[in-house]
Image (cartoon, rainbow over all chains, first blue to last red; front, side):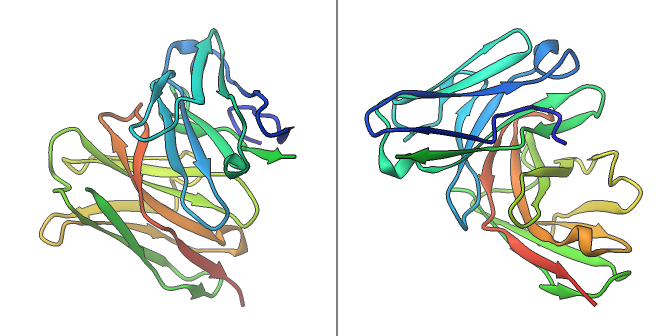
Amino acid sequence: QSVLTQPPSVSGAPGQRITISCTGNRSNIGAGFDVHWYQQLPGTAPKLLIYVNTNRRSGVPDRFSGSKSGTSASLAITGLQAEDEAHYYCQSYDSTLSGSVFGGGTKLTVL
Amino acid sequence: QLQLQESGPGLMKPSETLSLTCSVSGGSITTGNNYWAWIRQPPGRGLEWIGSLSYGGNTYYNPSLKSRVSSSLDTAKNQFSLTVTSVTAADTAVYFCARLCCDLRGDFDYWGQGALVTVSS
């Protein structure tokens, strides 16, 4: 079981908006540690999308955005495209484990 | 552009010791604010942080693996390595090396392509 909790799957039609939640606790997100988001296409390494809660990495479309509040964070994707179909992971730091922690991942299906 | 490349044994038997190397190009592993990490992903499952090491060689490990893992820098070759002792089938995974940006609480901004390690008798 992952320290950070994500929904196993989400889906949306092309053009729609979806959000993926990432829930932690007071030793990670709730302690103020930053949240980062990754996209993983099948058979490839994860790619950093959003860093430090809200910052898009260079080259990432502005359809992707991140937010954080309390013990949770969210990734939003607007104007869904077929190429967005992938697994998405959140990541933060945990003071109890003294290391990085990941969410279990969310599979996005574009209908 | 920083590039990372893992190399490893591929297939192993239970109880053996796994050794992986990550070769870094496009930058020095000893540059300040560079931290390096190992992350693994069992087939069909999510990501698991294994451990991180600083540009000065300090190491930090996932408590669930700490008794079996070690990592170190090879500054002469601009590489860093991971050793996992007494492997079992549960250690079967794709092993990624990555750069941990800025400090231990940061993001993983550069990744290797991954090396599949299968443990089977």
